Image (tube, rainbow, N blue to C red; front, side):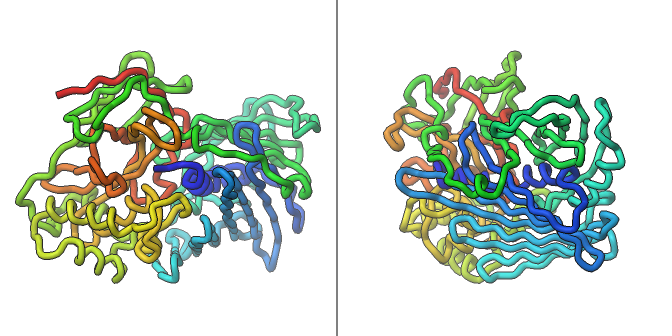
Length: 496
């Protein structure tokens, strides 16, 4: 289950994407080299800092950002960090990028080089395993310097609007962004009041609409940005180095990750189905996916009626998958977080599956194997890849989910990682609550079957509410940072 530590690790990756929006286009005057410092707040509590450096070297502009976050879980201090570098020409033409991400000592680096103007060569290094791929570079996509030059060209006149395609290296994709220039007004920057111009950035990530609101001075320096995140408010505020690196507040989000249930739900994973009435926390309509295990109906008031009825895997379906559906085939491919082509994971998958040829039996065995294989079930791991879990045998729900999913793919069974909410009768002193959780789903006989290797007793059941589905990369779950997917359970009903 996601608690304080898992929260910080996922938020790190998602915040990097938002930080890219923060720096891009409104960063600093075009000096040869300048370092800007910002304090990072969540719900008015300081949780870290962010820096941005711009340097011009041999006709290239190199923009480097660093982000460090810190939270507390009990007496444990949990730190996560990331560095991202954008490399461009002085005219803003993208040349490449470099990323280094450290989530609780687990380091991943990603480098990208734009080749021939329309292709991107990507190299990913995780746990010493190097993956290379060539993908399309989105036509017209810009990095930091290119967006800054466009922003200066458009100006800061109130009412000005324009569109820009920003490339976000963490997501390896571009997002179409609408920029709207607002009024100039006094803004409080940690006690220092400055006249700044409001800049709104509206964009979409993984199907989720996000709006950031920034405050810019006349030299295009972004001095403050705010964005809703996981039902809370995240802010980056300009400050000096001493304050940025000063002691952070004691932030423990464990209890904030739980959602109260209106009634108890005994044996949630053994009942046939549950119908939930969910109401959004914010003003926007609640949007959740429809799956083979979950159906949704709008209540006409911004909320949803969600019925969770787990489907059972059909017996007699052989594997590996031999179909031609492109979407299903995608769920067979190795990814940076699901290294299903790695010998270690392949061997574990074969050991788990044994001699069965039946896909339903194979995933059941994989689920059981992963539950027993991860011997240290605690919150000490940040956000690990499947290979890291295979080597450490340690972690919580997301570690169980990525290893289960990768092992399914390794034997030719399409599988994905799912995140959402799960009902628990008691956790960390809280009773009858829904906690953030991760599990897997495998494609068997035309249906996606839920798998939960974390849950020893009931496995996947009607107590699971799906919010997002992906390949295990935290960026796949970007929508979880928005208010649209944060809700309360108004009522629930057990169905037959």
